[in-house]
Length: 93
Image (cartoon, rainbow, N blue to C red; front, top):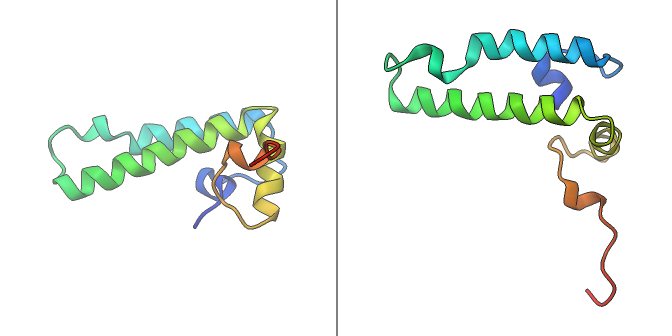
């Protein structure tokens, strides 16, 4: 259970260029296609999962509308962004 900030290795106050640099540095190291067929299936699946989380973190933290919402959710103990948590309940539901 790692926050997007921890995953990318940036401070919560990090500006978008710092977030972008951290993302590209990590993707250059952990992109599954870099390893071709050298990985066993289990290791490749873990790498794909990690890569997906990196993309998710970058998309959230680099978006000026999502990031403040994520920060609120993070303060409530949720480490993954869920846009449904921000929506107001529909009447009658």
